Image 1: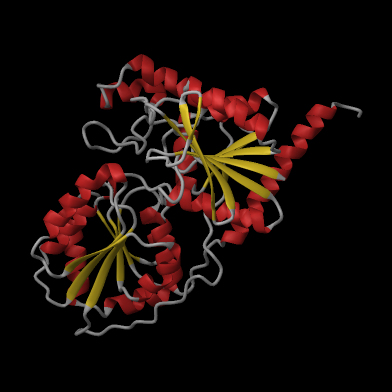
Image 2 (image 1 turned 30 degrees about the vertical axis):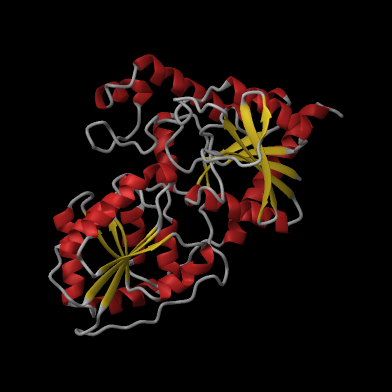
Length: 421
């Protein structure tokens, strides 16, 4: 099969969870003999780009996968919120005519939503993977203007109450565009039951399949560290540095610890447009020599990182649709402290993998860190419980997607042939 993947941003410019999901999936599909291509949007400078209408276009190869990156010459102010973009639609039509494919898989519709309409015009079946709440929430993370969590737009009614600065007509029109995009998909997939439930609450007729993101077989080894009352502990945060990830809450909580036998390592980096947040984090950590920033890391370093730490913290201030960090910790036998939101607390309780704290509650997080620092030996029992956890593999995820692809393409072929042919 020739498969085109559309995603709002991609390597090497962007490297968050959705990009990682797509790179893993496209690479696995390629190893199975299929032919993937990636269409993406780049907010960075596109060097040596050519002009196509109002867009800058660059083509490159990433890990053996052909990538086409586009960007408006003048980036629209609503590029991150709107599902309608005439110049993107025009380019998508030309792109799909030039790159014949059997299937379009939308890994994230932000900035490139019109590609779905272009595919439908050409009778190309398309599907969508939901990796966050963007299609039903203009703010992406279901966090209101009053810094509270939201359960969904309720057709726009809740948006009017919780995000009053958003124009009602805009919200309702956007939701209708999202509904049409998802209704036209041959399949819709979510990596977790929690994420699917949020969408089903808003769109009851939407059929959502669950395919968890997989981990690479053999990529992780079990952390065999054991502890006694005198053990020195290394806490860590691993992931992107963005305000909704709550890293500032973690730094403030850690700084309040009087213990000298602890260290906090921060692995990860900010995106280009959030450099101020990283400066804020470094200001918080200033003069505390127990806190160290290690910067951006890639997949080849993950196992080494998890072998060198004792506890990983996930201090999210919003729902986590799926946490690669949590699953990497489970695969590495590293205990977890996480916010009690989304699917995080359920997974930790199910696996007996650590502790949760009240979201955004610095004092509650500090108490969890302090209890472990005072008695490191409590980690031994947690690590024993974690040894029985079974996690989905990358190959299993790719296999399930491949079956969905085959079904979508076969059904489209049957429709074209018609009954009795």
